Length: 354
Image (cartoon, rainbow, N blue to C red; front, side, top):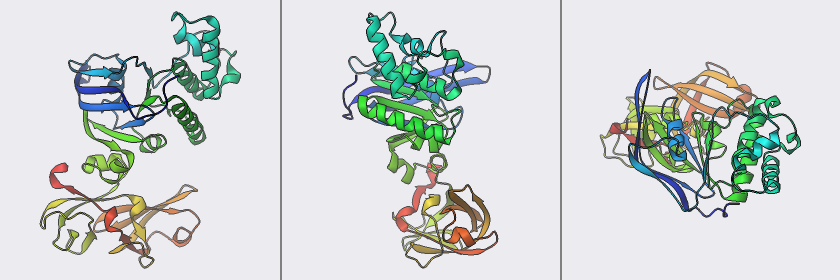
């Protein structure tokens, strides 16, 4: 098995460029620096067509960079699990150990490692079943077990939550976290879905149009996105153009202002961003600085969270409430509401960051 988690770099892309041509035209991926570390999960976020899968294939050695290089530590084994996993003919157990066949391993060793991998992902009881009969969720677990049977140093996952319901996503997350903790494997997971990325991520990298826009610790990227485009991709939905004022506030229009934690030069133009969970309704309960009145435009209750859209300064701002509690029980479309936010929760982005 791999060494325990220690944060050491095991796989890195350095100054790489990969160009692909298709009937849709030319696409170029350029990455200056991206590293995977033992025991950490790097989530690579981006819209469809951003180059996420190309990046994984390059890290796995399936694409060769035109320039730059992918650096591997000594003895590093990198395994890619594709977005659409497939099964070979034969049993689930045979599939789990297939990658070990021909590698000089004794038959008993192959069986032992295959069964251990199936056990890690909760499908040991399916070992003798024909792999072709598995459901989509079971097949995804088999693909992960087959990869982990190799005892990889780096595990590369392309949209691992596809076709899984909420319960399946939660169960797979638990199994993956346990496998990461036990083996110290470095993981890169690509997805276009922020919620799925956050189930696993320690660090986040945001990819747009073949270029890395930002990377860093999860909390840092979520709270301080590099610009409006990154902000939208990491869930900072409340964005507005603004001008910095000399008193530590930002003016959104003639009658609406927000506090700032940072202090850009007075008169500087830029964007302010507020995560929905940081925008508070009903001022007067210590929730921060008042930013004025708004009006409820829509309410959507998913049984756990009430998603609220409020008109403010000609914009639609979003916030969340716990369903069935407090304001969520009484709020209605059209209601006037007071809004507040803590200064440290208002993120300033310079105009040229767009």
